[in-house]
Length: 131
Image (cartoon, rainbow, N blue to C red):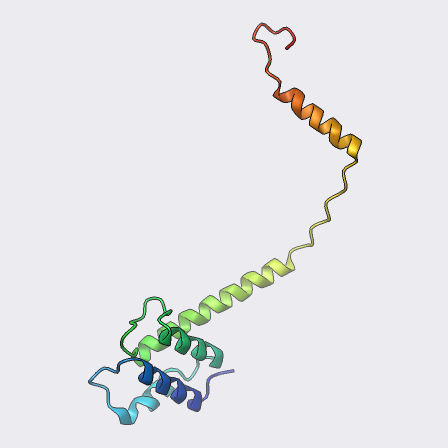
C-alpha cells in the first residue's frame, strides 16, 4: 500500500525533529514537496527509511541533516529494491525441491567403510611390496 499524504507528512515531521534541516528550506511547502516526491513509495518502506535515518543506519545518507526530497526518494527506492530482491530470493529457496532425509547407515556397513578409509590412508612402500 502506497504511503498516504498524512504518513509522508508524519515522516517528514519526525525527520525534521530528529535531524537538522538545511537553512534554505521554507517550512510552508516542505510537506507538499515531499508528499509529491514520495507519492509512489510504499508505506512500510517509508516507515523503515524514516527509522533508518533517525537511528543513523541509512547507509550512504547524511547522519546530521534531513535529506532532500529527491535523496529520500532515492533511498526509499533502494530500500524497496533490496526488500524485493530478498523476497525473490526467499521465494526461490522455498520453491526448491525438498531434500530427502539422510538414510540410516547400517553399523556393520559403517565399520566396513571406516576400515576401507583406514586402508587407503596406510603408507605404501615405494618398492611396490606390501605395507
